[in-house]
Image 1 (cartoon, rainbow, N blue to C red):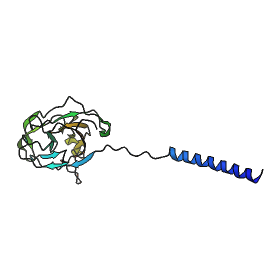
Image 2 (image 1 turned 180 degrees about the horizontal axis):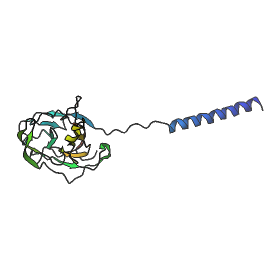
Image 3 (image 1 turned 120 degrees about the vertical axis):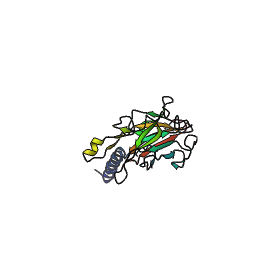
Image 4 (image 1 turned 180 degrees about the vertical axis):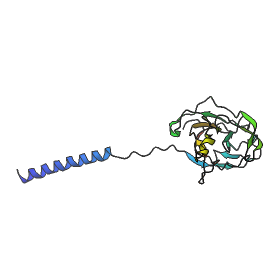
Length: 212
């Protein structure tokens, strides 16, 4: 075989190996993580009898003195109770729809119907020693004793076992704002760094047209 032929042969082999190497590299390319574009917030709602109001548009807590008529707040937290700016709690266009999903990114479109405005107004005993406290809240998203559909469940039997009595159910909800816009929301934690309850941490995505 001539020297020229050898050079041509080696060039072809090298080229084939290069193409194969590139092909393998392409197949092993890491797929970028697909984020849910959510924001995250934590509210200290541990004080019984005190509501913490939150605006999804501003992304912060807001000070509210007249919750029934104030349209600057969208959702409020007090321990495992939640209220929206709707129904018996406010004059806004709020409400809640519970989905069957526990994956925030899976929800792409908010439903157009089926929302429940705040529908509970009663006197409950809060704190220790218990104090009669009148409050309004949303029955769909609020947690409670061994709650299944609410955002957090309380089970004293777990505390007797030396465990936290709180279990976050991690349901995905669609919450309507005071203006009638849409928010997909998931509470992912309820404890602070010292494992004390009343500190809901939630992820959310705001949408003006219901598309996420």
